[in-house]
Image (cartoon, rainbow, N blue to C red; front, side, top):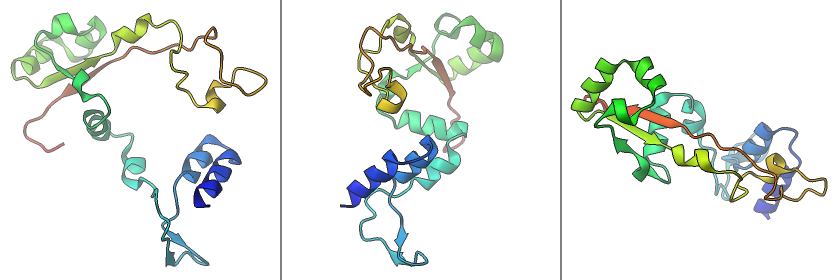
Length: 159
């Protein structure tokens, strides 16, 4: 019953932001919001919502994410990282961090070779390419960005 209401609120939302907020159950219910909600099965992730723009939060989510095994220690940053990144940080700084095993990186360059979206991973409102509200056919490609993410590990902090 509560899940049906959530789904209805998401479907009837005026914007993607309102739809996102509709996914979460309310902590308090009733007139004036004073009664604890016994069906608070999906509380709003307030910490993540308040801190999502911070680099430390990005790194925390990345390291605790679904595929942290992609993270590598950069032993030879001049060979492993792109020239634009080397120019941004400077060769000397990158070599120094690599010697201390403080330079980590993740490369998704394999994604650059994908021609179509193999999983249709976008939700229907974003992936709605047809008039009959069906997911886009496989011959209608979605393009992937192939980033390289760099992390500098600081042994002196807990972040």
